[in-house]
Length: 392
Image (cartoon, rainbow, N blue to C red; front, side, top):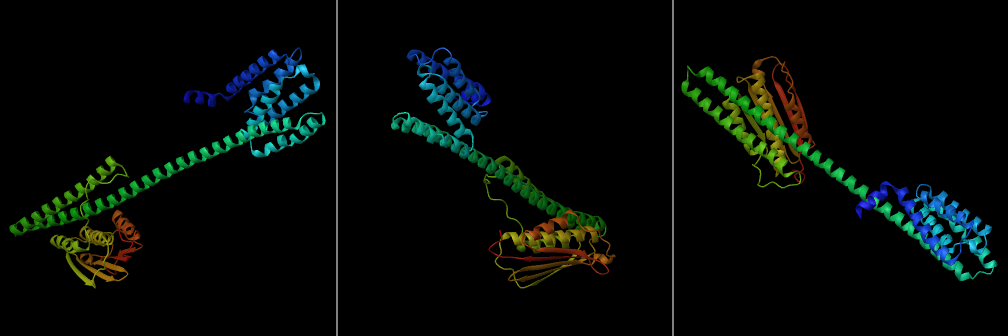
């Protein structure tokens, strides 16, 4: 059935020609048996059926041509030259086609024909119930066409809505995947940049103290090794999340709970790592954080981590840094300042790290300010307004 319908949609005029042939054959058989058509009447008979071949291409024109041919045929021939079946069925098909494929305003003119037809029929002695029956048949054909047109428009709207929803779903999935990739990329950058900076600083310190204090050098290398293993563990976790997301898709739920992200409680461990790398870090804290979710704590942790990583990279292990945390009911203000190891303030602005910090702060409606200090050093300021009900 689907193959036939597809073929009909590809070749509608062939289908209409076949319909015209079938109607003409049935009408001719009925007319021949009753002797209603003879001689020149067959020419009018053909002229009545042939326009059906173009009924879907120009339905309004076809309808009025058929009406005109029928009127001329009735007015030109006598009763034996008229096929009542043809004059009933063919105009009904044409009217149905107009109602099916054209706007409803095109039905007003055919409806207006009822009045003169009724007057002429009754004035010539025709029974009024014939008029009612014919009007009912033609009205049924028009209503069938209107109903199918409405149904077709409704189905087309449903199909378009389904396609639009599918496009929006795919777009949302792509946006969610892109956002997740960006988040993981930021995490990867923070993990790699910080831990490599700590490892480089520890390795440099170990190399510088190997001869003078071998035991201290060994301790530094052990800390460097531990830092590397910790970084590898975090990287494996992030790569695992990427692989799980690709294998299961955006709508799939993870098989297990992800490893916890660092937060405010891990700041002391972070500062100890930086101190072990040689940077003198002092931490001050005013008040205590509120009952926030892990999102805000992770943002503060990553901003402090990135700022101290830049201190190790640009100022070196002899630098001094100050981390100030000021908590309030509406959020937190963080300031990380280093002295640049006494060097002039000519440090290049951080690239992806600063962008990542700004993106993290912006996700909570916060802001990041970063720039050189007067004389020497670098300052990073974070203002993070937090609504506990929105933290995730």
